[in-house]
Image 1 (cartoon, rainbow, N blue to C red):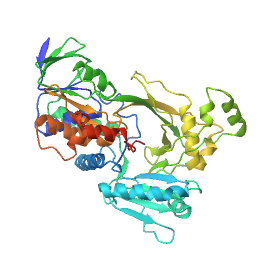
Image 2: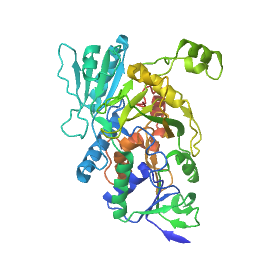
Image 3: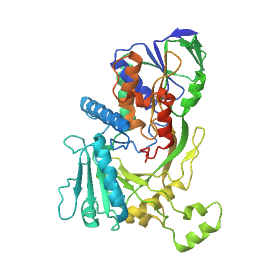
Image 4: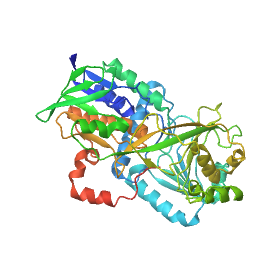
Length: 451
């Protein structure tokens, strides 16, 4: 059976749903959203569901500022159905030698457009903690708190060894499912259709899009096709004869019930910014070090373990994430889970939050899930036209899909409808890899912004 749609979007994750929504805002009609799974069910809720405008890359920072603007407008319009807050990210270090570099990086990011940097000491502090809910009347930029006394005054759960904490303020979290469903409901109200099917083939004629073939036997003729297939971005790109420069990493997330109340229900996202070795008992460490399969558990782990409270004031759940061993792999579903991950994350967090050590003798039953971060080497997304006329891509939103989705969808819609593009648009097109100077920059890329 053959039918027609003006635009076909492959993938109903947050990227595809956002693209559909913003295309309707731009006046596009007759849009078909195709996915073999239910919308927003593959990787869109497998992260901390957090957002921030704090990026070391000017183009990424501009994209995130725009996306947060759009999320705030949607929150106001909807009565904040997706529970957007602005509690911030708190990066904590116990290494005094890192303070100059921490300050320097913060000043550089501030200068790119993230907002002012305020420095606080116990002798001179005008620091104001974040409100636990909502996002209005909150500061932008960041606050650098110096000294254990000042840090623990505002965050008593953090170790006494902490010497500096950078509180990034235009940041927080939201319900990814609720945001996605709000966008989807609005889009479907504007005649976006959803079909549960797998894209099995793409037809081109003289370098132009012609049709999309589905696993249910349907053939959809269309002049416009959008690859928003998340971890299957590369596979779908190959159907177009385009080799997208992306790969996928498996990332896990664990949660457990903090019934002792170690992490305050009003806490920001808490991030340990130092490398560390895990706190094992001497006997445990000896046994682990003796075995080839477990020796790595006694070695130095990277910085970045983080946690936040999940749910409302009555909840006791906390989320734990730490990409201590990122694994590049071909996406398979369901993703393979590592049963040791919750304990590793908990032990890592116990370095920053000593109260969590009370759980190490009898670790509460965790919840564990995972998804794929599909990314480019420099960790910028792919948003824009492909070499096949009428074909576009929106993807490689590695670890920042929720926070970037609105601006990414708006940018994709501008490409498709040939509207005026923002200044940051060239930074995210596939064509950037045709620039020899850009490729040299990629070889030397240091900070990806990835937590």
